[in-house]
Image (cartoon, rainbow, N blue to C red; front, side, top):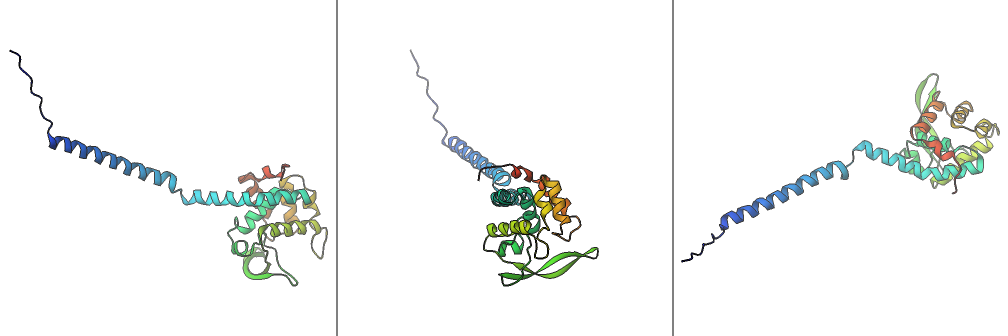
Length: 209
């Protein structure tokens, strides 16, 4: 006589428990993944965000500086470095509100604004009130900067001739300082450091714009 083996019916409670455990593990995995993803990818550090902003500003100014170099022979790296240094990568009030990248002072009947600024006098930094040019955009600011180097000041049309004749950024940076562009005694060193830190001399190479 043959006997049929009886199959055990699955325990519903055990089956439900296994399903709940499986769902719980999936939820836990999703939570862990989102936490890692948010911390490491979606939310970069403040230092990383700052670096992104700096490089974005450089990319915005670089084409204007290269165009200026073609027109005036002022090295693009010098123009970009001065813009970064003078405007704190476009974040200063003078740059962000009034598009003045280089701290150009105002005279005669032109759009202007009065702001506090730092000047190096008698061996120390002092805060003074300055009157600065207001520009409609960064392109006009770079253009005015180029014109200054090309035609000098009202009292010396050849004031920046040594900047125009410089063929490398170190010589040009020292020429900018020696020509009296800024009162900061370490101005040339700061420009050179800016250029080398952000590899701005790459923009001195001829390129099609």
